[in-house]
Image (cartoon, rainbow over all chains, first blue to last red; front, side, top):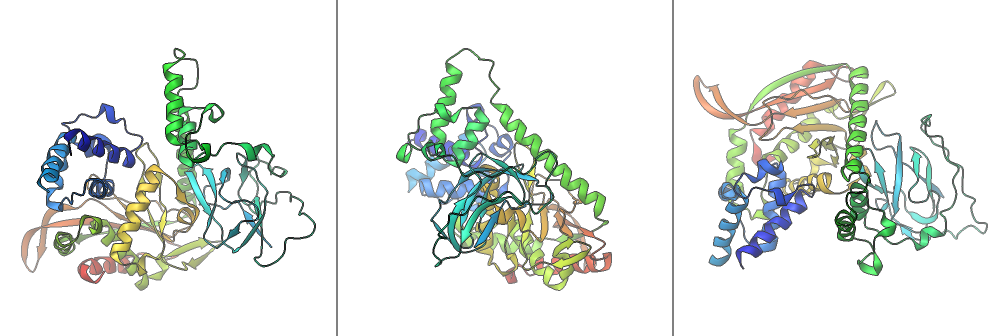
Length: 83
Length: 398
């Protein structure tokens, strides 16, 4: 899976959780939860959706590695190519 | 023969608009089936029916706003033949006193035109309103020509890209209107609460180290789809504590306390665009943590993106507000009438904690109770918070 495909999957799932958000205005390096006002329940729904989409089971200890959009892409790219 | 009426979805609701019927005359319905989509100040709500039967007639057409208590549909008992004479549409007889500005409308059968109207998904309808798109101008690409959310957005984009900034209503207006309506509804409910309910407030600090340690270990073992958040422990502990102090769970109606028929915990959910809803999860005391977690994830997602159900909006017997990790340290809640208690949790903070003559750092949460002095007093309230504390010290038993 390419990074672009991973990025698209991330954005699709963020949009499902926060449909009102303007994802084009998202700063890929800044904290996602801050920018989108996402709480722990939304984040859990996001992680579950990523699992369903990409087959990646993110352990709880790795949640901080999903802090920004760029960080998500990098982390998930590593996980999908490794599997 | 039974009557299906516009339900009251909370103390603050006066009227609702039938956005969409999900059943047709002749359809068989069971208790709990969703039969209509209704727009209220709290957004779109799916309305369930509370009797088995066969839909005889739909009395209120789609698009009409009617007061609470208005007859919406007539339901025939299953197995009975349809009456030989067609039932005349009944005049509205609202059970609740009709608000003066909205007199009961004389009911007419849906116009035949309604049958040719294109099918529109609820999300698409919501989106169309937000974007001020006229659905009549949208071409549907969904199943059977149904209009989807994407169709609406495409139509909105076309308009925006087309005529240079027509003096149309800005797309944000519908959303702003809805927010204003929700603020008004919250204000009405909270003003009523402060006017009628003699609140008392008590608080305690709860050591969360046992609960969080158990949770971390448990989550290591669990696949992502079964992982738990500490908020489900709080919900379950509150629901179980109700068994020890039942006067916290129920409604105050007509000068008397009515104990809840179950422990239906309202979960306060803030909406990102502003506003707040507190839909209920039913029978939380009887739920396994796994099921409770799934129910909470689903409820929060639907509250923020989609559609809640009537029973969720109207059935809560006690409310929990949990500020979560971004929140303040302490919350003193306002009871949602006619309930009699609200339990509040601040964010978990690591702080010095003295135990067994030693001081250590522990994760601590401030729990508070706002309760109705007509139904209980501070002594019982204290027992209630103490029970929640004790239950959280044995998370494996929750």
